[in-house]
Image (cartoon, rainbow, N blue to C red; front, top):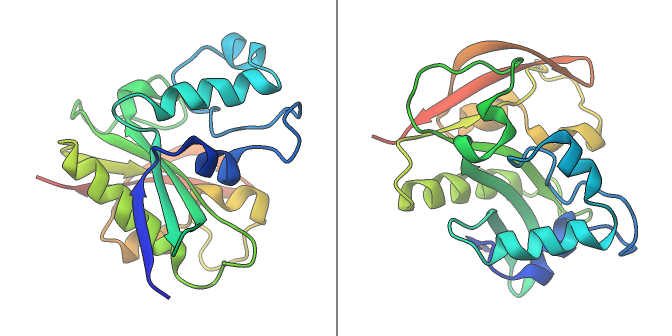
Length: 191
């Protein structure tokens, strides 16, 4: 299986990965960490969430990358300049310095395709996309689960080992906890 990672510029493929099964359902659409107020995020309901993502897919930089097995979309990773995300002001996730880093906060692999290394391909593809866009570094905020099982609904942030295998190193502790595990700030310098 040869996985190809491409920029997220096909809305229907992004919708397959992060959209709800029913268009009127309230779902994340991977918008929770986008730079918008909590009030604005909550005001985006049902189809409006998808329309916001459709707009993002048409903007530069794109909202992330997609993994393909042939023509089938099998994975998604959200990566964008940290300044354009809620991590820019997040009190639980510290700033290491003033470098204009990119944030990689969501990695999803479709059911039926997990356990095949696609998450590793997504992280590598997200890093390459950020590098191509001039990012000096990429940060991630995974759980430090020490090998313990992470609930699949909370696994989207990734694990420390996933990012270590991609060359990231721990840059700081955070006060954020997800699924009972502490989250850490990991960084990969691209300079």
